[in-house]
Amino acid sequence: MKEKYGDINVTLLDDFVAQCEIDRPPNNFFDLNLIRDMADCFDDLDGDSNCRAIVLCSNGKHFCAGANFATADQTAEGDVLAAESADQRNPIYQEAVRLFGNKKPVIAAVQGAAVGGGLGVAMMADFRVVCETTRLTANFVKLGFTPGFGLTHTLPRAIGTQKSHLMFYTGRRIDGRTALDWGAADIFAGIHEVREKAIELAREIAVNAPLALISLREQLRSNLQAAVQDATDVEGREQFWLTRTQDHLEGLQAVADRRTGNFKGD
Image 1 (cartoon, rainbow, N blue to C red):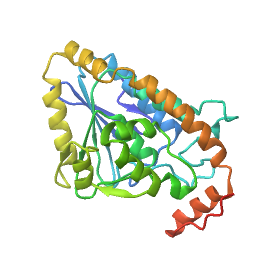
Image 2: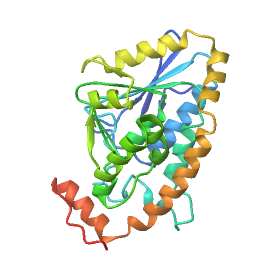
Image 3: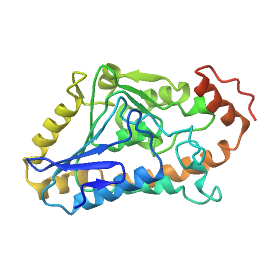
């Protein structure tokens, strides 16, 4: 397989573990190309017998601080407006759905921020390793629109309905300790040990029978890809019109200015 997929660096470690590193430091903002490259990488790893588990990590201060709103050709969550109509599926979410269909277990090493769609990437994984600097937030309402990347399905699945609703409605961010307590994370590590602990967990998984691992994951995540497809269909449709409102423009400016939005409901 290739060793590089755009800004995804792939290293096959010993003990049947593959390290996939997002290389857009310091914030590792995502866009359609990054999610497509990640999905292509995971597809290839599915067919590689030298890989039984994947560690998804990032080079930089943050795991994935969301979309890059400063880029002129991008809109909220990278490519939300790429669809030509509200009934057309958003291309970035179609690539996200592909990620939920891969066969190998994924452990995300989450240092710093996982924001918006970046949180969606983290929640795609089977397990998450966090630390003192970890910050998870679904801050969509602060930007004048609603969650995407399948988070309306994956976050309640991990932490329950009430806690996920609390995060969605307030745009509140939670730290690594809270993420562990709530079930959004599985291991709390030292600041400089996040990737190491993720690799340790991947090796603990990968030592087991590969066919059994694939079968087990398919059973445990049964219908997850279809559920995420259904969720992103609704998310994309709602985002399509909300990102065309004045409140969305105000939300973008407010977040950039680090202030509370002055929303008018139009």
